[in-house]
Image (cartoon, rainbow, N blue to C red; front, side, top):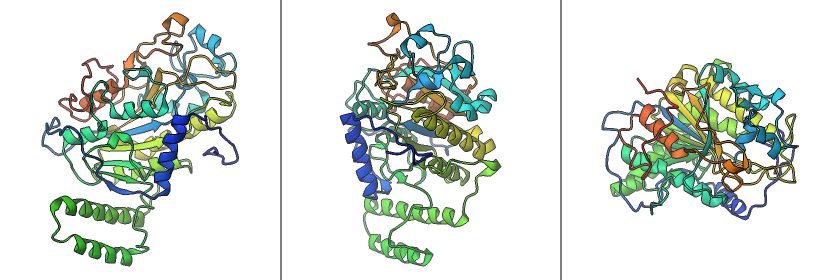
Length: 431
């Protein structure tokens, strides 16, 4: 495994059996070249309540960036004023003198300095001590629960698919997984979503130019002529998506406002999300994965190593995304999620093991930024949950607030069943 910024720097897989199997499955699907309109499997329950109403969608584009592997939020947004932080992490700690001071309690890792201007202008914020309904240190199970977002129920659909159910289907580019040929489990369900590695790489293998694409388009439409609507509609949608992607590719892309994305998978994926937003194609939800956060050993120190490399890439990419969109970020909300945080105590291999409480990053024009939100539980032994940072905020409450305040959702009960009404007030209502 290599570092995505510098391929000469080796990173270390954790060896966790469940993560290995989950990532192997994803890798197999990627190698298989799966791409296109994904119908998913039928849900146990049909959601027909139009909680958003029948009017054309005018809410924010929600971008969900999943940090796969268990992101160590305590090394990114450091509780420097909590004396137990130094006790638990004597070797891997980030010295207070090197932190970007955020408030009286927290400082930000210096590798995240590209995000400091957005913190200062209030478009970047943080929620600390976030978690799921039940602690779970299994990568696969925790990922599944996070994306299903329906604890205590028998639902097998993903929360984004349920969102489309209450919103109503509205065009092929309504919901997109970017950077992967297989959509995340959050898309699992009966509603169609689009999944692609990249805009420029999205196409038919046999259609190597516009002439061949036109021939295939004609042939495939002919094959579907007279077919039942349930078969014809997905084919029409796929062909329409191919044509639109071809137009975007032909137009080329130069990021706006001098934005420079890292030449990495993450950089390319968020570049393409920005292209879809600027193209006014009806995008409502975009999902992007950024993995390799399972740093059980050799995470490095404040001056370099695995963690610094990843935080640098993440921060430069988010900064470029916001710069590229410029004023359009007023109508965009980006949320990061991870399946769990890390243990409070460092291990003997220069890393941290699977934990519980985590950090969520928020960017966008509607974010109440420049603040670390959430109740801080503390790191004293009596404040921990089985040796982990306690979670004082449910990640679903953050997503629900995005949908309510920024996306016009009248109700989220069908999207997040059983979720209470408590919110964190981290978003400004959309005017």
